[in-house]
Amino acid sequence: MNSTRQDELLRMQNGGCHPVDKCQGPHPFAGAKFHYLAASTFLRDTGKTLFPPYEIKTFDGIPVGSSG
Image (cartoon, rainbow, N blue to C red; front, top):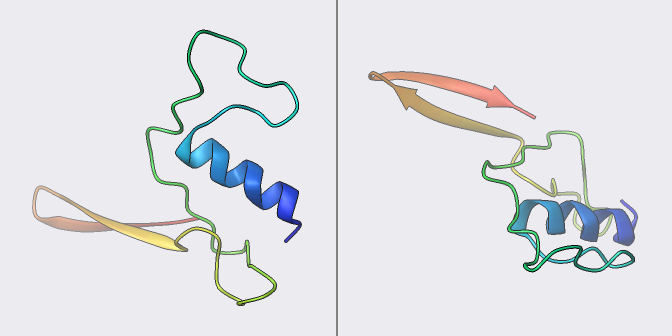
């Protein structure tokens, strides 16, 4: 994965100012309020996914899986 794209995905997940447009308001972007999942976005140097490929949450005692 291209380092610039990787950095932007990580910024969108974790927050911060855009590298070109900078901060457009009084506060930096806080980041997503949910976990990004990415089963098909791999890092070239490690072969691992940038984000977890799946997540399992439990609702009323029932495990529910989501894949990215």
